Image: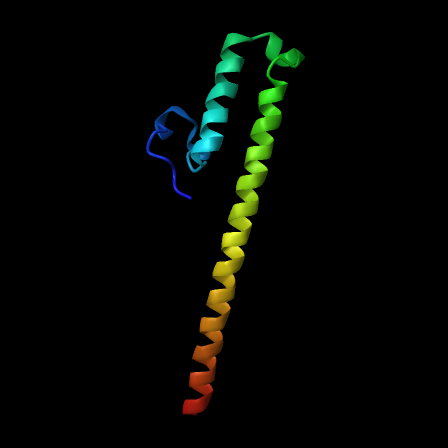
Length: 90
């Protein structure tokens, strides 16, 4: 799932630039909350957004894990066929 076109990745930190649009919007809200509540952020003013952000990251990680697993299956199958071809040649 690539970055959506309506999101501006330049505004967020470099290490968060790979997030999906859904997470990006929550990140923006969370950063805005921190700016609007410089003291309140220490007393739970932005906690609800933090929980949403954590859930979004978990979902993203689950999707990535599934995609990576599928890729590894395909790679293993490809390697298996290559090894069979190599053993057949010798």
